[in-house]
Image 1 (tube, rainbow, N blue to C red):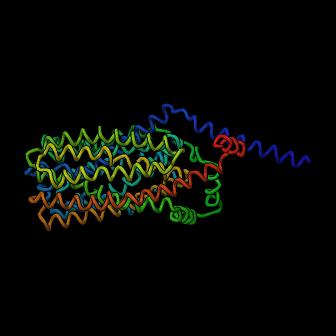
Image 2 (cartoon, rainbow, N blue to C red):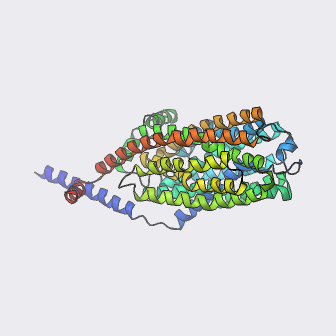
Image 3 (cartoon, one colour):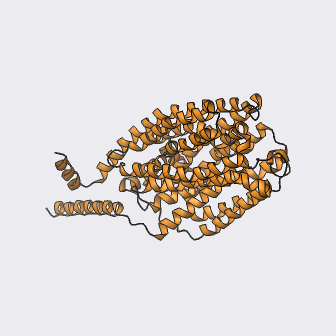
Length: 477
């Protein structure tokens, strides 16, 4: 009798703790630590993408002073290798290593060291004299940059609970567009101070943000993990070597249906997204050579403003409906890509007017760019904090491989069809890749959402105490 009473009290105590935990998570109050941390993580993301994309924009002139391509005598294939291929391929190859690194060591200090390193390597590139002397420091920089997403997204998963993660990831990802926007402004900067000094300005900003990163906090790992998350991770955290833990972690990740379909979706989507990121500026330069300054300003401002709206609205909708219908996050991603495709079709193929083409191109971002925050939050909500770095790395690897193939293919085809002097061919190549990407990825994202919805609902039911489940069933009746 006493034993039964003790078990009942223990069960009641466990249920109370679960209920209290749910209330605390639902009512998380954001403070300076979380807001400052997210701001600095976003700033690092912005600077890192500025460094990654600056090679796209430092070629506005026809003299060695205002054109990196002219100064270093680069072919279109070498440009493709220097820009998209090195970034995408190296991100793919080293992301898993970075993910495992931040899952084991301090995420904050990994990011601080990496930020100082990538800033120094960007500065080094400003002294290049040929293809070899710029691609070597750039390769090392791209390897170091893989620590950015792995560290930052793991930190975000412990700064914010599931109620805020889609918005937090969206605001973090907004840094990408700020970075590319600053890259776009580099067109004007290069005309004023030369491409080498543009690299040095970028490196200076990076060093400043790296210094500010020293003051972010390192939150407790697994702060918002559920009991089920901790139980899942417990099997790989005791009495195992590091290699065994890594193998076990990757097995968990690669056997997760949600992660598998998100990675497949990401591969297809980034095949076109990467092409736009690295080659759209060359299309506009080829088709509208007299509007480079206008494109620089419009593109820079639009990337920052329109993408902020797209990311935040998409993330807010995803967070709002995560409990009611978790699959909504995947619907946002799939539908956004499908809606944006006709805008890009007219901009790249049919329009002969700069203002119409550029306006439609920028407007397409309003629908297409709400996807990354929602997808990242799905990964964060599926895996415990201790595996988020590795899971994110696997996701980034899938996109990196696809992006590398896309940019290498465009580089070879651009040399073959002389797209720098043939804007029609440039537009046709871009829209073919984008069509394959945006239309092809939609059903894959929806399938991901189907499995995500099943997982979230089963996990939610398992985590709730019997009393809460009983009350919800009574309310439904």
